[in-house]
Image (cartoon, rainbow, N blue to C red; front, side, top):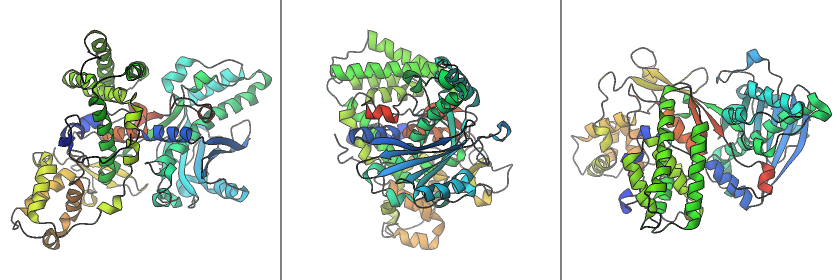
Length: 559
């Protein structure tokens, strides 16, 4: 079933959750990946279209230095991950964005690189920001080893033994990326250049493809190093152990403002997910197939929750809630839930909303959506956005209409505190060193005069106050001529008119704001798992853990 005409009004269905419920940071920070995640969309497309995969270049020495090319061959185009391996001393290994050297560096090339392309890329890609790439490159990324696990796997395979499965499952990756840049950064292709290609239409498909092929590279590299060390005694990594490995990622504040800066895109992502859950809840009956799929998804969620570890106290508390909540779901299914009754999925969800903490509610939502692919997969087509079409301000809109929109879409902002020190304790800015977003303490740090306009709730209140003395029939263009500082917020108000999920409904400059909640929401849409905050400002995650490899897709593995 395709997305159809999604009604922008949440009141149009009793099953779709309200923006007041889902657009709060606490719930966004409990998000779980679903089958609509961008990496799942990519894997399904490649399997359905019978993509082929080749590795035409593999040139590495015994220290892991060298280069490789991985080709993903689709119906119309080929994309190639070009990977460079480096023998990095331990003292130079850092996940910080200011690092200048890494264990591996990558670019996703549009087509198949020839010898001249590889020479050019070898001069630039290992330098990352200090180098330059061209419009033939769609992404630029780098990764570092998870040293202890990486060395363990190489040593075991070299000795003819398989690595310890528990260690693989606990860490979950051999390498973690510290940045995956796309959309025109450092000379790479702009998003507009590829947005009309079917395989790239969904958000972040180039980045997902780059990371997925990077995962294949990490396994190939440990097997190569084991072979070089162990010779005839070495063995390859067992298929069931390969599946335990994903690609790690360290993500910080640089990603956090994205959801605020792209309200149309955020609305479309949230709307698709909420429509998916609503469609499941609206089903009058549960079929044996969907029940079996749900039970499998719930069991997988329970196993993931038990294996998921974190050293951060906030996430530790959430993990306890998640495990207990999922156990409660299993008990409710076994002892109480009438799966053969009228609207059984809605009954299950209403019970969960009344009884479960947020972590467990959102995990349950993902499990309920999982077995309903025929019902919800078409919604993936609704998750991209033409943001330019909503950019122009309608200056003819009356003050009365803007006031009505503020009341309808921003009433949540009007009661928030922005005037006390706690209510405006922080400010967002761009660092001079790396041109990355950062979060400052207003009372203790300089730079507030260069604040980024991410204080949406405060701007909404300011606009409402500015309109108080204007006649209702005045065109808003007249207001902006007199007070142009409200242009940014007025544009957002007009964007939100038909997009109820466009705004994060919290104060993003308050003393208690947790940027990791923004990070988790975005990363869950990517398909990330194992969120492990290292502070309130950066997090480690895993991508593609449990997913098929290129050779598995060719064999028809489940995506």
